[in-house]
Image (cartoon, rainbow, N blue to C red; front, side, top):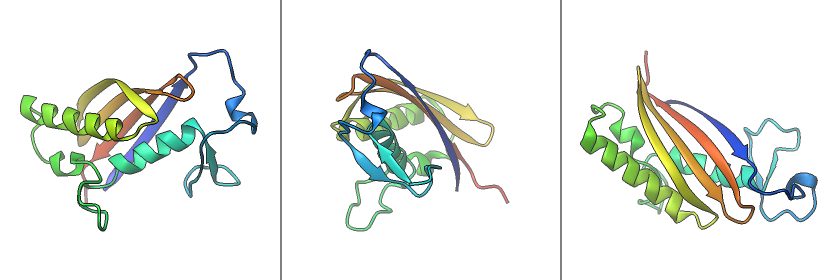
Length: 141
């Protein structure tokens, strides 16, 4: 399964001490972060956790059958009004399950070979908006 993501953070506050190495709220580890230390902090941890949730097929995680997204099951279905409602409901559920963020907006687009989901969230402890672009593509052989 092919996927890609891109994120953008918009600062709503004038305080920028979160990423200075002090007063960090969240710390995490990522093997795909691109940093030398593979450590993630604050907003990057929240975004990576959401990306992991979206890119996990619902029912795939052992002992957690409700974890994950239905997007992978919807890739081969036509993106009609009913399918869009189901996908938006699923995306809203995933964002609402994370107490660190709140949903601002969701947009769905059909790609030539998949689905693109644009999500705008507000990361609550920092009062910063983040835009995430998630691309889900069908496998092509």
